[in-house]
Image 1 (tube, rainbow, N blue to C red):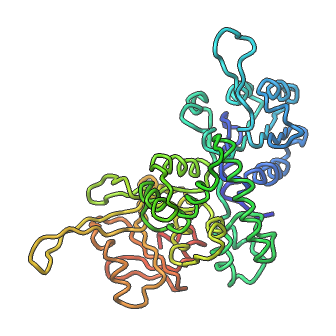
Image 2: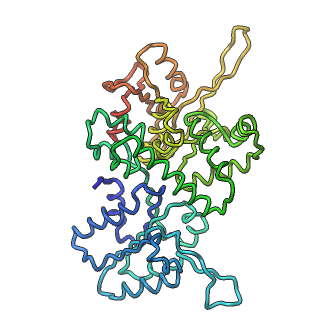
Image 3: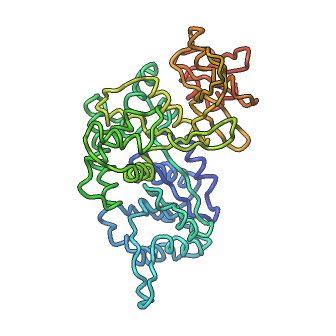
Length: 432
């Protein structure tokens, strides 16, 4: 069993809070295992009767009848009828429940869906509800409004590097390279050869993610376009881009005319399916978002590498993606930073330049400025990496994460230098 303590602790803290616990995340990242195995084992260990844990996997064809919300509601009410017991209801892939016309109101457009079922269950004090889902549409603003404040999201991702290392069975010195190459989808750890791991990741893409996305969004005969967009984004992690730039790439390489609005729509679909993250650009001194261009990162670096047939394995870009994912795992809001400054050129005229900060991580009153670099062993390279950090002008923590295995140290300006594995394995590493 892969320990996922962070998510288990979240579920425990929300147990019996009167809310619908909604576990979201990319498919095959371990949501169902977290709920039906790890959390169930916890409940049993604290004395919950097994008969009081109601489990229903809605993506299983044997349960297809319960994708009808009326059938689902009736089934669950029958199984939770004893008012003297507390029931824990686990519903897997809740978005499979389809909305239907209310059979009791014929003349008015009135739909019944899974939200109605869940809200009905929550009226009973002895029922604690947990659901999983693989797309963020189930938590759109409209649905949250319908929940009337009774939906509580728990976002699950692929294995963090710390989780991966704890479960890694080989030589720990090989863990970083394995993670950089194959990522943190839990089942990847059961595969022994490169061929098996690569085939599994490609199958996730073609047979599960893309097929699911096309079906859910009613996309037909455009798989090649989706493939091309993913390939372009995969090649440009860590680089600024936008739908317009991707459109230009289509025109110059594929000789295809696809408008930027269509590209933007498809990118949003990938984000909706938790395959991609989008990092906006933020002007540090101007204290405002700049907008386009921006950066896209994969929620799992192994999926990105498999997308490119493991050909573009630049460690600096891969490392940047992994740092971004770690910050998301630690529940920071993450932006790409820009510092604008003016200087006088050789011609004596004032010139303007923008320096990039890889990440600005915010959480409450906490703020960190973070640069990712393979090495800062040479003075010139170090000065290049910290130019933007030295021009920020505030007192928040500044960090340079390097590939080298180094003892963390601070320079004369208070900037922290730390090795990537130390940074990833110690959740307090940013405050050293």
